Image (tube, one colour):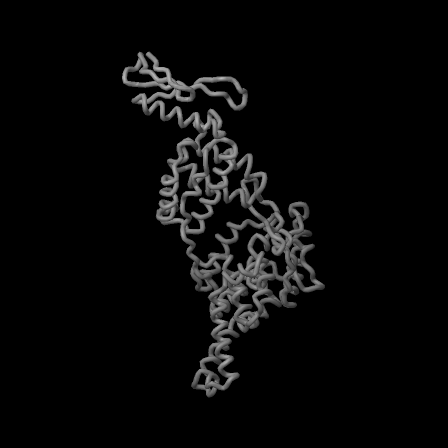
Length: 435
């Protein structure tokens, strides 16, 4: 027979149809309909069944929905991405959310767990595994990637708590991986010379894209999103107003994330002349192809005027260019941006100017990213002080001054390397598109 208990304690009995299985019955008020309902909990002992029931009732009293235990993590992540994240972040950011949460969280064994059953230690174990062997090739994900995954998951579970699907955000009890900042990759003066020489040999629009990245520090999406009405030929500058991104729905333009990302970048006269020549060639191409050319106003397009494809450019052209120039293929197109910054900083350009050209939201980002370069500048400042105070530094060609002169020559090399290839900027194309 069922044994009656006090209010809120439920009733428990051994099921006659399943000896050894105990059922605890609890009554509760549905928070939506306010009607009294019953909920059953079966377990191997009366104590366990009652414990489960009490925890469930307590959850209802704390705001959990009655069916919260039926919501799986993978289902909630998809719902959160569609109903919440998509309404407050850019599409490019949403794509990062989807990759991180669907591939690494929803696709893991934890994805099939109910939200109410998730435990912090289990999630921590998953983060640790991603750090060790999270990639498809068996290698570990970077600490930055895992930190982002943790942050995205925390946002999703925070909303689940608000919606009554969880009691608390268990991610708050996990530890993020330590940040491992690797020095940025930049080209040496010799590599800059080799790369620009190879672009001169190859010619074409693709080579001009590389040169513009090296001279402006623009991101690849910003270059591909550049339109002719953003090129100020009289003022000698380009204005970054858009970035071309690729999503599941195709390519589209987005405005930069921050106010500082919308910026004016002055360029040398030689580069402006090259862009003017490139515009003339594009106009001729439009006349030749007629209706087959889609004129959307982009500076760089494919043969038929359509927006450039990021992966196609880097995979088919840029990687081959690196091989031809004798540069490791691990060097990314984005590292041209770092190289641009390194040239300026080594030439003594103020970090604030570098920040404005790169479009960093704060100068602290610039300082943190290129701190190793600034340390070199600090060393040069100490040497300069030594020469000024006559402490021996800078006296004689064989002493510290000779070493300083050698360092100064090294610093000047990137600038000389680019100037050495001014002839490329004045006549960059040795291909079928040449004027």
